[in-house]
Length: 371
Ligand code: PHE
Image (tube, rainbow, N blue to C red):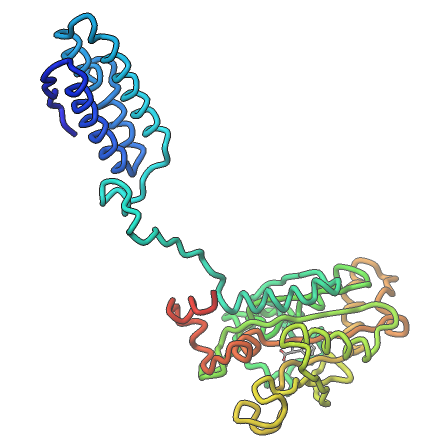
């Protein structure tokens, strides 16, 4: 910023015009370089400071020598200059790039502001949850550090039962002095939240449970020791297997397109009876058979089934600790279905991703493709 008081050659109109044009250009250049509130305040003091401000110093110098008839045109011009400075102070601060060129160069590309994007896994998880919100389901969450009771026992996996082997469990250390049902572990699935919800509230229940789960699996192209599931639970009077089929058929069409077909294959989970694996017609080949579906035309996507009466019995036992006469989950009256799906698997199929590790790589070049 210049402190030099410019010379006014004469008070004639052309000299006044030239002198004020120079000052106006000086103000414009400085104003375009204001990128911080501090710089803006320095600019204000420099020009408008009551005692040492440039405007005051220059007008003092120029007015002193001015003949009487030149005072009015000088005064008008100083007022205009002051207005220009005040307008510059009200304008938004320049960005570094426009300031760097000292003024606005309309030929430069605009300052690109990339909006942030959700992680592809969270986006898929949200999409799944949304499909069920539209069917009247609410979201529930539960802890990742669970007790043996909620993760296994109440779900009809008795202690030492071989079905536990299918869920390689990460145990929390130093639990052996506790009764087995209280031992802590990392939840291997989101199903324990089924139990937590039913112990806490009576039917009708329609919930989805998105969340992280943990298994002692070696990482490879399709496995990760930490992954995500969305669980669903619907419990009411008169809930049948057709409700389960209709609900999941709708959900798969909502997620993968209305052309996909679903089929239900007999399966086994300790906490559902009957149990099924749901397959969708291969979205890559339309069911004709390709490498992605191992030439079967079908892709296996999720597990499901009707809530096993043994689960209702475990829930009832818990509820009777606070209300000994509780009969809310009498399986003669109450039925339900549950399902669970892996979010990574669904996201990989949606986007044609072949390695699960990309999701956790932190590589923005991968992640930003899903904007
Ligand atoms: N919890 C099961 C799993 O992780 C999936 C499932 C959920 C199956 C609900 C049936 C019903 O493998």
